[in-house]
Image (cartoon, rainbow, N blue to C red; front, side):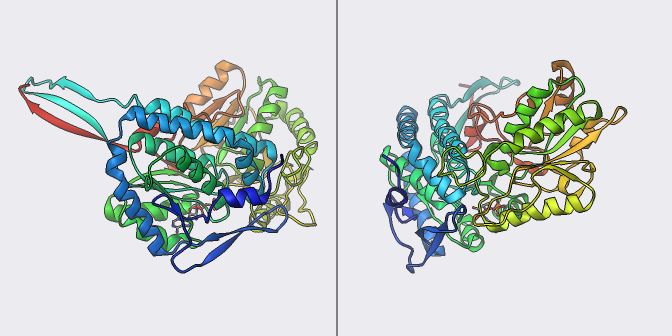
Length: 484
Ligand code: ADP
């Protein structure tokens, strides 16, 4: 049976979930959530007031102790039920993502599966929270270290992975014993609401996971930051910096997953068909709207033509259209504004001499669509290489003997992820010198809930996933015990 927008609305409640119940906002205000592929309104969601947001923090504070003291095995089993329920509702989640975000069905399905996996991974981590007991080097005392949940956590997520960015924060927070308030992006609150409803059904106690969607994030988030112990944010570097300044006032523990500007290096000894395959994944996952998306292709001159032409051919073969038609490879961008931003970046690069081997023109017609585009003869310092494109556009830069591709790659304030294709020896040598929190060697995709995701430089602070992910929500407490 096919899933309808009505099913999404029913499951997503009002969009405001506090202390275990769905409710309307204090002043009854709502905002519209639109489908970027059609421009149609999908649902009205409760526009949380500042008071609603503070109520959510109060609910989380009230629930904190009970959850923190719930035995790890029990917390683990609840998380495991979240994993099962998300898998059971995978098509519903994917349909919601397609409608409110615009991405293709294949990408939405992949995201729904990836999102669920964070619950499985952190269910497994919950029962392995460690501690320490040892003799001090001076022999005068025992050093006892226990890990405590950091407290109430405010989780702020973007629109590009509306399910996975939420579960990547909620799962480790719950594993650690924290209670949370989730604030999703106003473009994509429905998917977040479905995830929260499933968490509720899995048996997470009332108040442990709350959801607020204020359409104007700034004042509501500022108010909540006065009362939480932790913030975990995924979004733009600009907003991340604003939040870090606010956190400084109260010395709040902050984890930041910010923007990227990923280089994709192709060395002269790379397997070119494999590099093109990897480039398709690294560029086109989520239609390019990912902080992990390859943003600059840096290709040796000896393989430049072969790589660019094959890449353009593959990009040109992709079909573009609404994700509701499951065979479409490329969906819409999240909004007309995002599409216009991408179109302007391409027009700018072309006005400075870049050529389009495929795409490169803003389509007419309905929906926030932009075609897969490969730009050649892009200068290494062209402005398009210093902007996070967040769309299906691949600028290809040529480098020659005597130029170090790592220097071009590192010439950015971002440092989230880098890709390199070449013989394993050469590629691994590059990997050690790339300024990035994550390096993909001869691979186009690396995200894995079992691995630490995060950046260096202005791409962020802290890691999500892996063994590190739960640590972002724990505080090591040292107890010195005299002669024990
Ligand atoms: P993007 O460019 O991907 O939309 P943003 O950084 O603007 O990234 O948004 C990411 C998240 O941050 C969203 O949930 C958004 O509502 C929220 N946000 C935007 N501005 C602020 C702000 N001033 N304070 C707190 N949160 C914000």
